Each structure stands twice: as C-alpha cells, then as structure tokens.
Length: 475
Ligand code: NAD
Image (cartoon, rainbow, N blue to C red; front, top):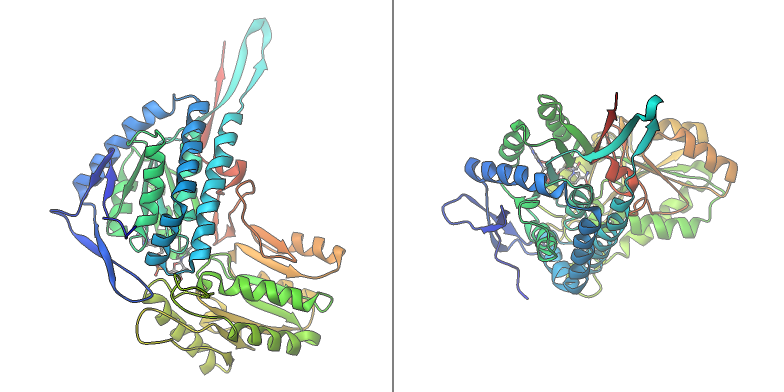
C-alpha cells in the first residue's frame, strides 16, 4: 500500500485540497514530499463545529455498551491494518517501524481499556427524608477540541479520541500537519466500526488559526492539548475566555538520579535505549542524568560506548535503531543547544553533528559536565542528546531534579528500598519510574505537574477528565 491521499474528515465527509490552501507533507528521512494536505478555512471549521454539536447530542445518549462496541470494533480494525498504519507513520514521522508498530498496539490497548472503563461510570444516590433523594451523576463534558503533536503520530491522537468517545463526547481532532495519515487512519477505523461521522472529525490547518477559531466557539466545552509549554499557556488563555475545561500535556526535562548502589550495566542498557527512542523527541525522555560522583566515570564511559553503537538510518530499513528527527526545526535546535553548552564549557563526549546530506538526521549525542545556566539545562531539548552531570549525593540530586518548573517524568536508579520511597515522595513530577523506563500504560494516569501541565490522559483519570459532575436534589 502507498501513502494515502490526504483529506480532512468533516461531518462524515472526506474533504480534499481542491479550492483550499494545502501543506506538503515530507518524509523526514529523505526530504521528499509524500502528499498535499488540505488546510481548513473558517467555513470548514464552522461546519465541523455544527457537526460536533449535533454529534454530541446523539452520542451522549448512546448507551455505554454501544460506545464500547465501537471502540472494540476500531481496535480490531487497527489490528488488521497495523502494518499499513505503522509504515505510513514511519514515512511521515521517521521513527523505526518497530516503534510505530508498537504505537498501533498501544492505541489498540487504549481503545480496549476505555471500552471496558466507560461501562463503569457510576453515580450515587443519597437518601433524604420522606422518600426523597439526591442523585450524583457524571455526564460527558461536551464537544472537545483536541490538538495532538507529531512525535507519537498514532498514540497521541488515539489518546485524544479514546477517552472522550468512551465518555460520550464528540471530538474535533487537529493532529499535527507533519503526521496526518496516522491520525486519519485512527478516525477512519472508528468510523468503519460504526462511529457516526460527526462524533469524531479530523481537521488540519494553520495551527493558530484553527485553535483560535475552535476555542472561540461556545460549542467546544473542553480543550485537550499535547505540545510545548509555550503553546499550551497560549491555548489555556484562549480557553479561559469561555471557561472551558482543559487537559494539558506539556513539556518536560526528565531528571534521572543514578546512585552508586545500582546495577550499572542494567541501568545503562535501559537508559540509553530510552534516551534515543524516537531520537529523543519524547516528552518523558530522560534528559538530565544526575550521577553520584563515585560512579560518574564508569557511567559516562558506558553511556558513550552504547550511544556510539546506535545505528542511525531510515526508519523502514532493517537494523535502524534511530531514525531522523521529525522536521528541520529539530536539528537546528540541537545545533543551537549543543553549541551553547560547549561555548559555556560543557564537554561534547560524542555526536553533536548532522548526518548525511538529505533528511533531518542527527547523531546520538552526549554532553558532560554541563553548566546549570546553559539553555540546554533549562529548555526541553526534545532531541537525541543526553546531559551527564556528576553530583555529590541524594540531597543535591533531588534539589537539581526539582530546580526546573517542569514536572513530567522522573527516573531513579537505586537498590535502596527506603531511598526509593523517599525519592518517589520528594521528586516533583507526575510520573516517577524506579529502576525502569516505563511511565505509560492504558490503566495508569499519564500527566504532569507545574509547567508540564495538568489533568491526565489514560487510566480512569483520563475518563473522568471528560466528564462533569451533576447533583440533582429532589425536594
Ligand atoms: P510547536 O510548539 O510550534 O508545536 C508543537 C505542537 O503544537 C505541534 O503539534 C503544533 O502543531 C502544535 N501547535 C503549535 N502552535 C499551535 C497553536 N497555536 N494551536 C494549536 N496547536 C499548535 O513546536 P514544534 O517545533 O512542532 O515542536 C517543538 C517543541 O514542542 C519541542 O521542543 C517540544 O518542547 C514540544 N513538543 C512537545 C510534545 C509533547 O509530547 N509534549 C510533542 C511535540 C512537541
């Protein structure tokens, strides 16, 4: 199968580029154009809003068992279509196909989880005198405007769709213009499984135009955004004008605390694989490695050796462990952040260069002893660069972990059980991984604190974020 013809999906219809502005979708491994993506104009967005309002009125009254059936049907279709979806996602985003195949599996697991979870939204009844009652119920919040980024082209939009649809909401999804085919495949699977075309719609456009238009409409009752903190703050202000509910998954700067008592080889194998997954373009990527002085040299050497062994290449080629960066903005950011760190006295231990003369490839990079005032120590690098800094001990490591306004994922490697519990409490983050890499699964809440956002996706929390609570009192 070839890369698909790109459309929007508005009110159940495929809307093409004819008569509209369009955007060239590019393969980041080659720089070659994959196709033209239609961009919504104001009339398209108004049509989507009217459809979302109508779709919501019917879908909220659709029994949970029927909503579950649709989600399970879509999960089955994703399983059948896994290879095509994964291939197209790799073509438009760049990561190795083994990673996009796993993304399809994650989307299947998420839809399956919410199919079950939406049938367990319980209210409660309070008994009053004289046979009267008060009833507490949870109702879907309403039409959702959802914005998903390009770094996880399949699982990001799946998160934007799964919980709201399970809850009885309608969704207008604007996934990233870099990775439209993946988002369209998800919405199409839902439609093919019986979801009405006005309950899930896919639009693309100039991001600021689309978000301003949708968030200005009273039809939209919730904003769900994944992306950078700076854009997230801007969208929160727009949502505040109409007091819309928000779920914000924003940036991170993952601290990793590595103690001398840990199994160093196990830690390094896990951490290096996790660091360079998706070329570091991961909001929960481990970034600041804070390593106890006594093992710093061994940790640094083991890290650099493993980073140098990573095969960089086209995500569709056998043996590729790291693909290109997703767009030309990322290698530019790497050059700026790594250059700034070197100018300030940091040691470049490996990498720090672009690779080849086509596409957006960058070498797996490691910086050592990076001064705290550099941009890379304060800004989310979102790329294949690790920062290794020696630290005196636990108190200093915790202080550095909590220094930044970000609080998404944090990692700690230590064999000491009491210290594990202390760190889990002291580190300011939405997710803490002890002696491992995993921070996401469909049944557990995914989200951050401080500038990393608020609210959750995944887990029962992700469903509750799509519901409002009502108390009905009989008198
Ligand atoms: P960006 O901040 O311009 O865009 C990030 C995402 O937000 C994209 O998907 C984009 O389409 C969307 N976006 C941008 N402006 C928007 C607006 N006004 N309304 C609605 N959506 C909007 O930057 P970028 O160059 O694409 O990515 C750079 C930075 O974004 C990275 O350094 C990283 O910090 C952050 N990012 C975070 C995540 C995440 O998972 N949290 C994912 C992708 C990018």
